[in-house]
Image 1: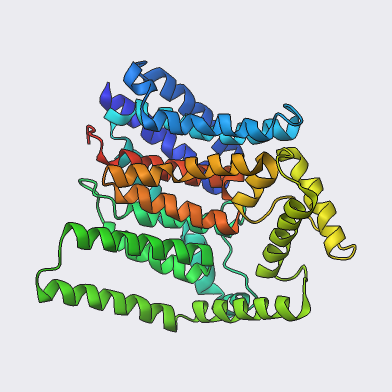
Image 2: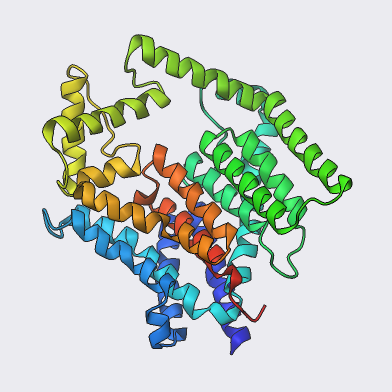
Length: 394
């Protein structure tokens, strides 16, 4: 039975990853299949239903109601509620398959999928190096899978980067996979990916030094060389230089000329500024999720002298929750978001802390958890890290 359950989980993981990269429909179907799998294998014990993981994974359904009651279960709110269902599905799957090598069965094909997905952007880079360099100078990046969502794609690569550091027995080629993924993240030139990769390296480095104190010169020298090499790569990589130049250009233009829809960071700053103005000036808090787009767009037109915007959400998860559910909803959301980090600290699980902080950072510049890709990339890597300390049949 354990081997059969593990093989089924592996097949479902492959379907999920294929959907993540190439088809939202397949991704949605895979979540339904995961739900059936989890319900079938879940043991309905009191301890299971009261476990921190189980409670945490179901909390989003309750929290979402804080922005739904205003207008009821309309189409927009139902869509939001369906999107958040990935949390309880992933939660009960992690619990049900705890004895079926959950961490290893999910993390290893995840790394393989990330390496396969790199063939497209890196292959394009090799064939169009000159054009790629020009794109970097315009604040753009390489073409990727996942409906060309380069931010979520970079988060996907970073999750695989973290998985390559997990202490899983019989995990092959971890060092090579880590190196390839890190180089790819640098060349992809997505700043969210850079920061998350830096968080992963710093967090793991701190964990490594604490768990294995540096007691000899040889180990100290290796760590110092690795740090210097990484900083050197950051300094000399053309992609990074181009991206930094564009970032400075973007910010300077916004500061001197004001809003322009062709900006990258400028658009984010403008939308978030408008959201904050709506909250402070118009008391647009606890208005409900479905009312945020119209409120934000109307305020944008008012602030920027008749200009319009296609964006209906702030580029900040906390502003979104503040507008939709009020300050109390934002507070409860924050407690829920950071709880895994506290749990990781209590259980001495650095991987859980690292991924919680990584997603929290992405939420500062994106409404990561509002998207199908974002919720999946939050919860599945998090639960893999959550279960890393649990006994399994690996």
